[in-house]
Length: 191
Image (cartoon, rainbow, N blue to C red; front, side, top):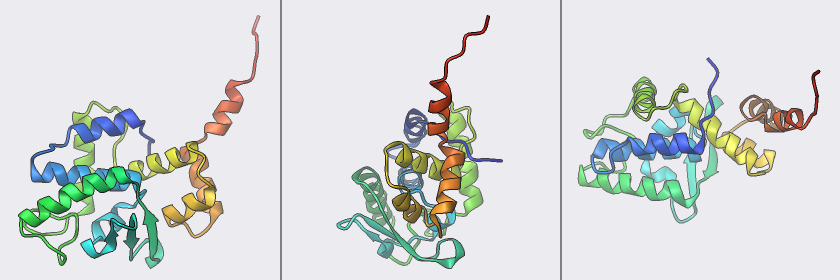
């Protein structure tokens, strides 16, 4: 089933249904923020360790992306603030560098199937009628970058695609704004 792009309001609603006080809610908000604003695949996000984050540089090091390729992505201040809350919460629970960033409160890695089910539940709770899943957040972030006019080469590197052609096909699928805008400008008067 193809990924559905969420609106900014839908992403905000998804974030709002995660508790800001409960440790798992703080963790879930951080995961959503990273998938959405970092355009990471779920496996990439779940494999991250604290050493892969560099807040000062604004970078996240993905060591094992698709095809086992590594890359460094950029991340804006918004998700960093949410991630930092989770990192502080982790420390209070005795979770440090050897544990994956996204883990249970006992330090066990989260499973991708758990995250898929979690996002679907959160989407329902937020009243989102679209299918909500990890790859959809990646698509949403990529579509927003395109709408903001970010160069396709930069988007390609952020997504970890091996070629701009792949990114172009990807964006044509998730963000066909130019096609839609061109068609909407056409005039026709039916009698």
